[in-house]
Length: 198
Image 1: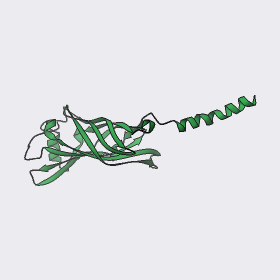
Image 2: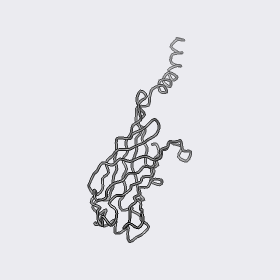
Image 3: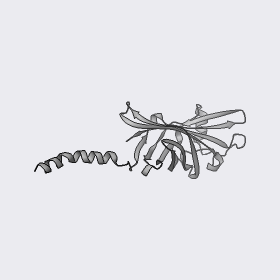
Image 4: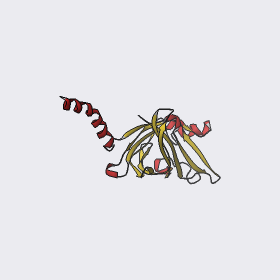
């Protein structure tokens, strides 16, 4: 009887020890924080100066999976960008970019970046290989990560992660080539993303 009592008393402790000692295999899911996430672009305007704009409405999710048996972490990202939220600081230019001559937001309201190949070195995210879709055209794009950090946020009482990444693409690859070569075909894309664990 005493042996049974001791066994029942020890059961929660045993379960806890197993949970602590077992590697985390399930992916941690993070919701992209739209208030602190922006996608921007930069281009050379008629050889005069580099100009920039951004998209103000971004949403999506990120998953980060711990490496098995000491292996590297992995993960995925699904980022949706509201094309109509383009913001250059000029109402007239924004209207032009939303038109059929450029993003054609009526027919193609969403820009999307998806990846299931997040490349880590230890705890640091270094590169993201994915697919960028604009105006129904999908091309491979690799983001170089310039900053990555995760921490517990007292503001949310949850774990959060943030990253900055960039890539260079040709806008003509996405049927956005109007005024090339006078306005540069090469566009630098930059992403500032913060996400909160669900």
